[in-house]
Amino acid sequence: MRQLLFALALILPLPLPLSAQTAPELVEDVLSQHVLPGYAALVEETGELATVAEAHCAPGDAALRTAYGEAFDAWIRVSHLTFGPAEEENRLFALAFWPDSRGVTPRSLSALIEDADPVIETADGFATVSIAARGFFALEFLLYDEAISTMGDDAYRCALVQAITHDIAATAGAIRDDWETRFAGLMREAGANDRFQSPEEALRLFFSSLNQGLDFTADLRLGRPLGSYDTPRPERAEARRSGRSLRHVALSVESLGQLAHLLAQRDSGLQADLAQAVEIALERAARMDDPVFAGVGEPQGRIRVEALQQRVREFRDLVQERLGPELGVAAGFNSLDGD
Image 1 (cartoon, rainbow, N blue to C red):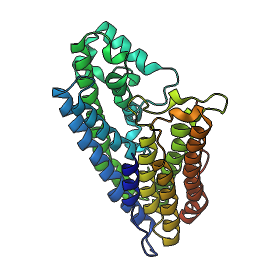
Image 2: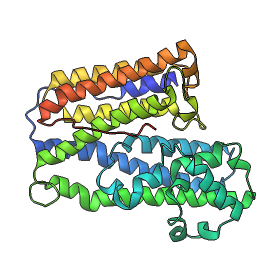
Image 3: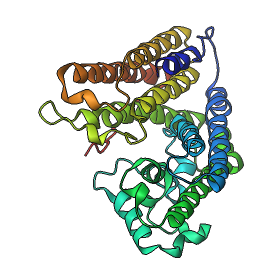
């Protein structure tokens, strides 16, 4: 984990010289260097996951777990882009239904398995099931949860794994295609269509995604397992079954750092300060030896997670206090359900 997190810090772009880029040029840079490559990588990795699952569907299969991890990594890197194509047809939640504070995912999967529901036999049929039984978190239960991964008939669970992986790949492909054929064009032509009245409006949407992505990481990815001092909630950590909770924080910070860097190109000093904030957060994560935040119930373990949360919030504060005004936008109110 330590090597990975420091590697992520190293791939952050170095600050550029002072730039006089226009709003349309900033929009184009975010699209061409962040959004479209991110979704292209997601399509590639989810396609590979679906292919691997055709031959390797057992919960403990190393090849399947590796493909799952690489595809999940690719999703986390674009998961803050919650608008536009990700909103259509509940695609965002079909890929990642979390938080699941009421335990709908294991109940939905259990019902499918116990009934050996034939709805999984076709892609169109599976697309009608509860979004809680679709996506990366449903697949995590099938690969890593002791109860779900051994429930019912082996052959049915195998078919369910294959249905979920193909559905993930199809959903990722639909988002990517929508970006490439429609939504990127609307942002590039902002001011000449009804969706975006100006390039500045498109920039505000990217800024909002950056701000909300940092809120999500600080308040949910870290805040949920922290709970309160008297009632820590390590069982609420994101993707804890697969041991990915800390990894998701690091991947998110790295990707949001890239987005912030691209949006701050008019001010090389701000770029440098943002890069430093990202590096500090990643270094703090790299010093942790608690991949699922299991230690939040102990004083020292809690202090380390709180310190990481504070570093993420400092990055967010820098975005709100300096990048927002530089772009001429404000963060606005963002309400996240930390239930």
